[in-house]
View 1 (cartoon, rainbow, N blue to C red):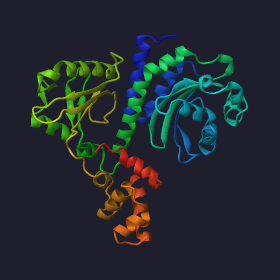
View 2 (cartoon, rainbow, N blue to C red):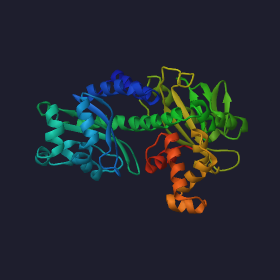
View 3 (cartoon, rainbow, N blue to C red):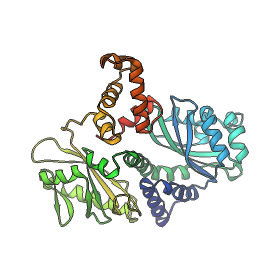
View 4 (cartoon, one colour):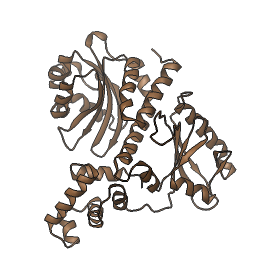
Length: 374
């Protein structure tokens, strides 16, 4: 049951388009669901510290009432989920029968009260992201009469997993920029990571402020014939190959998931370079890029995350100072004592911070902060 190249290209284009636009996750789920052979498919997000916090970020074939029931209760008693994370907590890809005894599953609450009423039984799934208590996974389900998922289905997920994980993380990063009060363009320009948007043939469409500054330095990267080129010959062949195959994926001509390399400089340690496919049919960036190049400097001390929060979400200096202490591991009480204010005042400031950042609790604020690419 292999996927032909045309079908695979369609799935990847839908996937990388979803990284840019939230409403494209549903077309992606439909295209991959057909390839896997499921009747229902979901991207599930859960915070393990909040046992009953779990939701269908997007679903196909799952009724709204069951999505709500899963969020309110069944995510906390999902024994398949728990068994999968125990099997491989960071890179799990597998089937129902590979992680749990089917007789145990048949007797479980998650099957009898959630899956069975929807005529769903067999499952296969893949982990998309795991950071601290946050976990996201993609899952496919179908009736018992359709038979179990097999190694062939798992091979498809293994082929697509690097793309899915990369697109999911990129989507989350771009959404955080988009919802910031500073706006997407301003937020990108405030990032200390150099970013370059390329078309399907590797030509530069635009860069953020850090990207243009890196080109102006002329220490590791130059612009020649509107294409990025390493300054040092030692990196040219690998860089050009990485750009070519990644841009090909983003424009529907390949299946390469992008990758990493070191960019050597005339002076100093090499820079870290990551190239990822991308696909966008709207004016999300004012352009239609096929790949994004990220370049970071390991020698450059990042700005304080509270400073990034202050810029992105318009925190006051007092709120920014409190956020920095909380990110450093201080409690509300100890942070208030260090700042010589009352605990009640600190809690009022925290409430304002949560409102501005769109978070509901301190753990969400910390997770948001840790994922700002400062």
